[in-house]
Amino acid sequence: MNKYNLGGHSGCQIYLMEEDDGRVFVRKISKDKAYNNRLKTQSEKQASFSGNPIKAPKVFNQGYTEDGLFFFDMEYVQGVTLAEYIKTMQIGKVKGLVESLVSSIVPEKSAIISEEQKEIVKDVFNKKISDLREKLYRDNDIVNQALHMLETHDWSKFSHSQCHGDMTLENIIIKDDKMYFIDFLDSFYDSWLLDIGTLLQDIQVMWSYRFQTEVSMNTVLRLIVFRDLLLDEIRKIDTSYVLEIYYALLQKLIRIYPYTKDKYTYNFLNEKTSIILNDIKKLEEQVREDS
Ligand SMILES: Nc1ncnc2c1ncn2[C@@H]1O[C@H](COP(=O)(O)OP(=O)(O)O)[C@@H](O)[C@H]1O
Ligand SMILES: [Mg+2]
Image 1: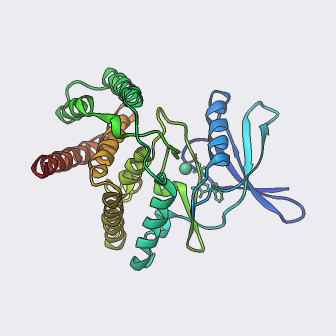
Image 2 (image 1 turned 90 degrees about the vertical axis):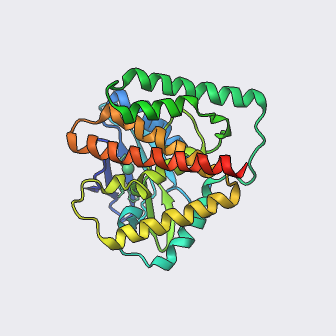
Image 3 (image 1 turned 45 degrees about the vertical axis):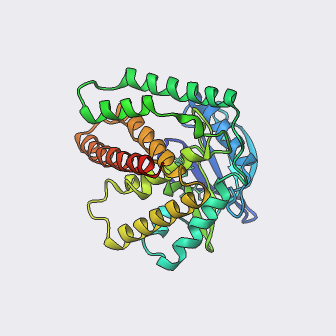
């Protein structure tokens, strides 16, 4: 059996394995024992994901290494990540991607949320945000403003649904114009609105590209088209969802602060968070004018 390192961000080991008969598969191994359960949840989320047309690589097998590390084996999708693909793709293809994404993420019909469920959702989010406040610097006006907005927001529109948990452009693989989700993650709450918020972190905030000194105009242009078409599609489902996904993005950005070690990332985050705060204020003004 041959194996080739595929790399990654989480610290887990990811290998392309080639068996003696030439068959290939991908093995993802936990970075340490403490991470075993999260990777197991990832494997289960991936195995049970159902979307149309987007699929997840089939999970073939799971188990523990001799060192007691959890691993799972999955189908190898020989393609490129969406983060890479978007740099050179034909702009006319963006619309098709956006439609596939929306039809695979957004539940068929939006469930009516009972008053009881609304209270549960509010509690979950309020708890998460109050935990966040505990962890955050108190001398940052942008963070304080954001926390205040997150605390006073009514989260009851975040209906429970299937959720990827870490929907970045690097966790989507494209092969023959078809998309596959990889690298699912457990999250404090499962809702597709949170997934779109994470997607906006790349498309609007360009998080995955932050260390690239020069992002080509081609990429920026495609990301803008991607964002605008995505917002259009979301608006078609329900105009009020646009504001909700910006709130999802805001909580996502604020959750990065406690992990920020370097000044460059800290400044980047401040700059972007401040823009999103203004976007939200504008959207809320619009809502007030419309009503
Ligand atoms: N099933 C797969 N088929 C093809 N490539 C894969 C597959 N799983 C992972 N990869 C490649 O390995 C990289 C890292 O995998 P990922 O699961 O996202 O790890 P991490 O948790 O470290 O981000 C991906 O960006 C992708 O390029
Ligand atoms: Mg990944």
